[in-house]
Image (cartoon, rainbow, N blue to C red; front, top):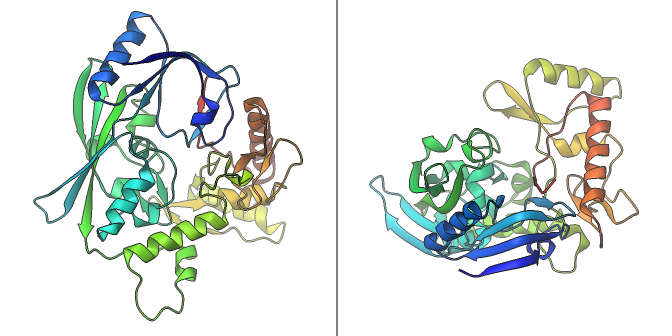
Length: 349
């Protein structure tokens, strides 16, 4: 295990902001993860586990303890009893590399999650989802180091407590587990998912149903148009992706929102989600609060392609990012009575 000191964290994130880690370890095996955890405990260092760096805002002061980057790699597959195929994937594998691997072999289940940056280990934490799919639909189990007793455990799907953009890993058991590997159950030759409006529009007029490879290509194309695909040199890609979660409202809350919209002669785009609740477009709320695409003339602003992406236009500080975040949240709540919840993890604040 190689222990490094004062390692800049900004280059290890997609946002490219933030200060250094006092200590840094890149662990390529379970043994190295355990060794790094033991080191942090022996020196009484605060521990932060870093994945692909795609969903983080690192404070300008950096991290005062130990940053552990999980770099466990590998993709292994085997058949399951129910006719599906299980893919056991190292937590450090790039997520889109795994999706490409599965799609190339014509497995369905993750095709709509193409183009999402970050690592495999981060996907169960937030129950990553896009274009009508969530990873919770395919996660069979999660192998993790339990920091309560230093035991490596396998958590079944139910034990992960998946909900909209959440799991036990970022709610009730936040900070308890370090994800080492994730096993996904995919369907060979399965029907691809086309349940999202952007995809329906893309394939409108096709005489035959698209296959998983065509779905993947379409998703990556759509993400690129929205600045949600990492393209070197494009300032709209220096972000943490969607900065705010789509709010999930009760019927009463949604009716209140609709009444506010009616006074402005607007209709709220929404769709049923999570039982009897309504999931509302955070992008719509942001745009109709005065923060349209391209907003801002300084080092921090809104993407020219997607209203939900706060971007680093070059040389931005984490403080500037949070100032714009606060401004947007305050204005949306003032106008619409809805409090937006940030999606990225805030590190070192």
